[in-house]
Structure formats: C-alpha cells, structure tokens
Length: 396
Picture 1 (cartoon, rainbow, N blue to C red):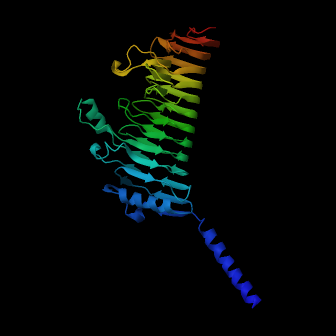
Picture 2: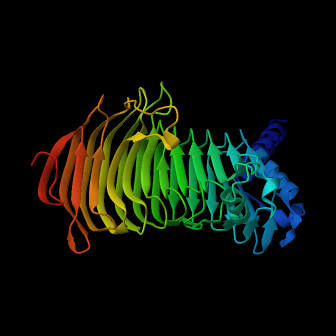
Picture 3: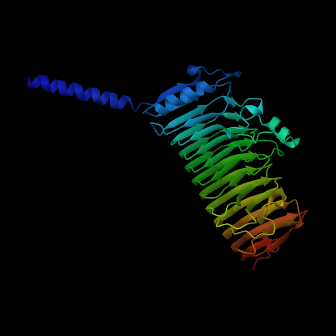
C-alpha cells in the first residue's frame, strides 16, 4: 500500500513538473495563421488583433511573427494588461496604412500599445502613407483630419524597439507617453523635409528612455522632449532634414512637470532648422528644464545650431508680451563644432522673469561662411571655457 501511495505521489509530482515547465516554453504566433494576407490589399487588421489576443493571453513568453510581404492595417490598439511581460513582435515584412488618409486620420494613432509591459519589436517597416494628408494640409483645406501617430505607447514599461523603420507618417512617427525603461536602437525615421508635424520620436511624461544608433530625417523635430521627461539618453543619432532635437515646447500649461537629466551626445545635424534647442511658451508656468548635457555634436549648415527660445508664441496667440515661467538651468554645451547657415549661431533668448542660469559653453567652434559666427544672449547667465567661437556673450 505504501509503495502504491509513493508511486501515486511521484506521478502527481511529475505531472505538476511537466505542466509547470511546459507553460514556460515560449509560444509563437504567425499572423498568417490568423488570416493575414501579405498582398498589401487585403485588410489584415483583425488577424493582427487575434494574434495579439493569443500572445497577450499566454502565461508563457510569446512571439508574434510577421513574415515578408505587405500587410494592410487600419488603426489597431494592442491592449494590456497581459498575462505575461515578455511579448516579442518580429517583423520581416512591411505594415502599410490605408492609402486614403481619412480612414485613420482622426484616430489619433495608427498602431497603439496601451498599458503593456515587456514588449519588444524587432525589424520591420511601418509605412504611414502620409503624403496625401500633408498635401491636404498645405492646400489650406480646413477639413483635413489632424493625422495619426504611426506608433504610440502609453503607460508602458520595459519596451525595446530595435531595427525598426518608420516611413511617411501622417503625423508623429513614434510617441512615448507615461512610459518607463524604454530602449530604442537602430531606428530609421524618414519623411519629407516639408511634411508638417511629423516629429520623429516624441517622449513625454516618461523616464529612463534611451535612443541609440539611429537616423532620423523628417519635417519637424527629429526628437522632441515633452514635459515630465526624466533620465533621457540620446547617443549616436544622425538628424536631417528636420527641426533638430528640441526640449519643448514647455510651459504651455500653468501647472506642468519639468524636464531633467537629459543627455544628447555624438549627434550630427545636417541642413536642419535647429540643432540643439530648448523652447518654452511665453506665458506663466511652473515648468522647468535642468541638468541638460549636449556633447560631441557636429553641425553642418544648420540655421540655429544652439538656441534657447523662451518666447515661443505661434501666431502671437494666447501669450504675446508675456514672460515665460519656465526655469532653465544647468545646461552644458561641450565639444560642439561645425557650420551655421545664419550669422547668429548661438542664441540664448531667455525669460525676463526667470533668466537662464548655469549655462556652460566649453570647446565650441561654429562658423558662418568660413568666418566666426555671432552669438546673442538675453537674460542668460553662465560661463564659457576652453576655445569658444563665436565669442560668448556669457561670462568668460
């Protein structure tokens, strides 16, 4: 009897061990198995939603695979919370937005991840087909939709994006809002230099975000940094065309969280409107920007290589004549050289109410038509050290 009991207990233990180990084996879901068609014509939206439902509902790590081909998708929301925190989306094909911009133009986002943790995206091309919407906006037609962000993440943690290409987004290409621990690497963003509001990567209300080894050319900011962003690291990025790397615009709201601990290093700007920029609305606000480092930067024919603009007021509405409440402090510009497309290569136009403080220039050399460029400072306090050209209007 004792032997039978021991044998039964052993069998139960083996079954438990088998099922617990098998539940940890990663599972794979090919979107073709759910009805997706790689012809670029058939609507594959529901197939992708079904594949996500399986991966999100799995207690084991899961992979969604998108094989070569063109997959037409309308706007999709990939929702959490999931039963696992390890979902990989491996894309060997191209995801294509509808050619008619009105299909997704008012949806806000084309591909949107909401409250998901541990999602990784490897490879692939996202084609937003936004050119027709850009043309609508330029025509002056007041009935154009605002446009959709190509890839959005909200309240998402532990996100990895590697080797992804985003083409011709209707509006912003990639947005992180309320996210933590994000790593982007080898990302390529491409849109026409005159495409409106097509920011490459936008980060707001997020922390511990890293952007590495990427190439961004678009019609707006290559990277834009919104309020509430902390611990942002940008390294080895090529920017152009576009409006540069911008912190802001800040201070649009009276009560607003600040931006701090931002590093931008080893970046090349080619033919951009701005290089490294901090901008805030000319209106009252509790916002701030501090502990910012711009280091090892090359400027090639950039209109405003180094600029702080605290009098941002589009169309002179809702802020003309007001001073910015945003406090900018402890900003370092180190080892920055190259060419300016305008005479004034350094412009610090700070708030009369909250002057910039702790602005540091070190080893800066910027020229205009093979001559030393000029600098302009207003309500800015700081130091210059090493070789600085143009001659700084800060204290030497």
